[in-house]
Amino acid sequence: MAEIVRADTAPQADAVLRDAQQLHVLLDSHAVEHDREGRLSDAVVEQLRVAGAFGIFTPREWGGVEMSPTEAMDLIRTLSYADPSSGWVTFAIGFATGLAGAFLDRDTASELFSQPGFSCAGQGTRAGRAVRTANGYLLNGEWSFASGIKHATHVFTTAIDSDTGRPLCMVLPKDDVDLVDNWDVLGLRGTGSIDYSAYDVFVPENHTFSAVSTEPVTGGAVYRIGGGNFASVNHGAWALGVGRRLLDELAESVRTKADQPGAQAASAAFMENYAAAETKLRAAKALLYEVWEEIEEMLGEGGRPSVRLETLAKVALNNATWQCHEIAEFVYASSGSSALRSGTIQRLFRDMHGGTQHFSSSRTILQPAGQELCGLADGKRWVFHALK
Image (spheres, rainbow, N blue to C red):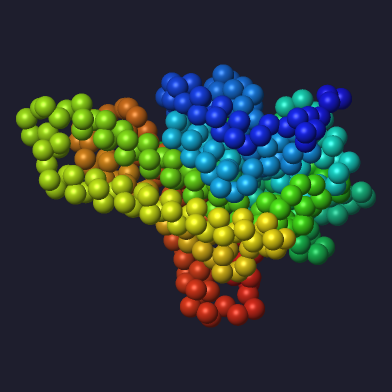
């Protein structure tokens, strides 16, 4: 077995972020290839691994970075600014691998993380069926949107225990499932978020854990937020990174054409709209970080996020996504025919629209959130993206 990098030699969050900032040119230069090929390039995947980015949520005991939510948001924004697909794959692999490291029993996690390049990807929002058998389960199901699975060694998936009705998370070798290479989409093409299926696949019991776990076996306070709340960290930060890049691309275009007749640089209306877009972006970022800073304070005191803070985290994610969607619409409309043609703005526009379709960013989540904010959800708690 390969030796595990122990906590005292695991990468530090600030060093990983600095290294990620140095990857901008590499990620940006491969973005067109990612969009065309439906996966990240080997060169990009290797450098993300070397930088420690895939270990964003892995416990330090298993060699990961175990970032706080706001540290993770800084990293995701940085990578998504350079290439939205790279940022998306990083948080998808980071999330699944991190939860496996935190909630599997220690012996199982130690064995898995001793394997060279161990990483997980899969799907958690559409559960399969797990039938108990001797020492484990037989897994059956079909799943979609397995972002990053082409770059992972293992599948991280969910299933319902047919005896108890409990949702389970399961970790199994990628070779045990059938991959369906069907990622033909408008945006986020480079994420390779293909489908996969499993039919009577045996999963040992020690490769499973409760999907609603909030007390980690390994690792610190960050895992007490529970699996569902990582969506607000991941998807909110992703949207902010893409929104920032869109506005910067537009500003650069305006400066380049400032001396041309009829240039937007001379348009008071355009400048007013650009200022409004900048305000939307900064306000969305401020809200998302404010909520997560409060949650981090609560975690530091040994607690878990309150129902109200979980509500605000979901609202802040939703706000970040749709404010950045409006920014994408503004940038596209302001860029004229150049945005219609293949290029950075067109790709970013498509990627942003792809990101809005994730369930965690659905506007329907605002309905139970509004109920809780009005004080009409006494005794209820968030279970993934629903109040129960």
